[in-house]
Image (cartoon, rainbow, N blue to C red; front, side):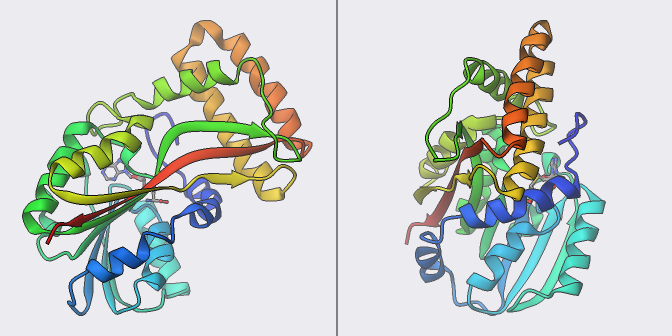
Length: 282
Ligand SMILES: C[S@@+](CC[C@H](N)C(=O)[O-])C[C@H]1O[C@@H](n2cnc3c(N)ncnc32)[C@H](O)[C@@H]1O
């Protein structure tokens, strides 16, 4: 993510395989059982980016669907449309993209939706924003599947998969987590606290809520770990630096140590996320 809160297509493409491997399949059965019989099924994807959530979820919903992808970034929505043209997801009747700023939304698209979904989204928003969404979904009795909210846990592992600690991992992690709470245009961002706030707020609005971990597991030595892990480490360094400019040498040295071992294939990473299913109670 850039300092002006834009997400590059390159970053979203790089993380997509790790996202897809991490997501909870266990939430699908209760979701499918609870969805109304409407045909097609109307699905709304909030902060859809270039369509990663659609590519994972649509083939698993087992019936004809109409998706609306909502995002403020027209480049990412164009990439989503192009991807869908090249490689149409099974069972999709129609994909609509809507360019909109969700900061100012009263969710008009929820009206005829059966399912609202999002992935890698809730760390950006405030607790008030979730309250507003939960209220709208509860009033319309819409189910929610919200994947891949970071929960602030990450750890390095060595080539055997055992924990590998550096004396400054905790310092950088807490600086990064503090940076994530800066306002991204959707109120005071929850950052890693979204993983706890999201199920709590949905439960308070009467939903039956189930949570599953969906951690990225990036083993040491693979090409994808080097590429995705390298981008992660660079992003953590930049955010920690912006949060603690007084500690920039310490952060740079930490980054050099961790990056060198990652590039040599000696380090892997595990990054904590949660998936949340929210079903209206009958
Ligand atoms: C971390 S990306 C996740 C994208 C996608 N859901 C995925 O899993 O690959 C967050 C997305 O939220 C979008 N976004 C951020 N702030 C937004 C806002 N205020 N309104 C609409 N979209 C926003 C970004 O453009 C980006 O596509």
